[in-house]
Amino acid sequence: MSCNRCASNEQKNFSGELLIHFPGLEGLDKGVVWVFPKLIVCLQCGLGQFDVPDEQKEQLKNGNASPSGRAARARGQHR
Image (cartoon, rainbow, N blue to C red; front, side, top):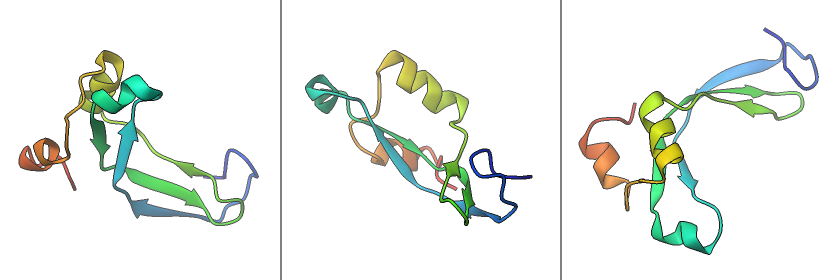
């Protein structure tokens, strides 16, 4: 598979740990959404791509994130 930005074939898979914050000052009260995706990184241009799982997409849609990462870890969502 080639890179969507530069068409290079120099891509590598990684495991990731991301905290997604809601924007603006009001986002400070919403907590964060933990995501533990598989990342594809182009080693030529640096483009990174990942998929957000359904449960975390719902949290982002509804704005009901966990106030800390402990809840996600307690449910065993990290990989």
